[in-house]
Length: 110
Image (cartoon, rainbow, N blue to C red):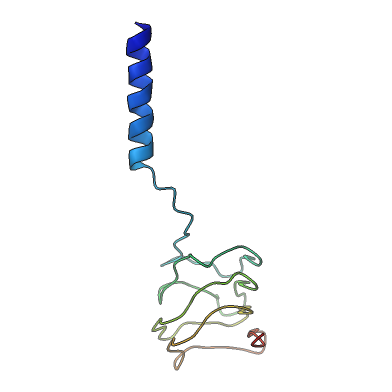
């Protein structure tokens, strides 16, 4: 009986580890993150796309010092009003239709 339980437990753990995704990358695709303070979190592996909602038009997400990678995204009519983009990588992203306001904070390039 003891050997049977031990084998069952081992097989259960093997199944758990085989089917569990331990990736730390957060997927923000299609998520409304407006108004959230994510400042200082490591978002370098996080996934963002043109369906991520960064602002509700007034309150924007704080992405300061997160190393968020928003490069190479065709954003379309994304709203960045009130978003803190300090330290965010926006290289090669299409921002031609994006909205910004006086409370949008951009990186100073350092």
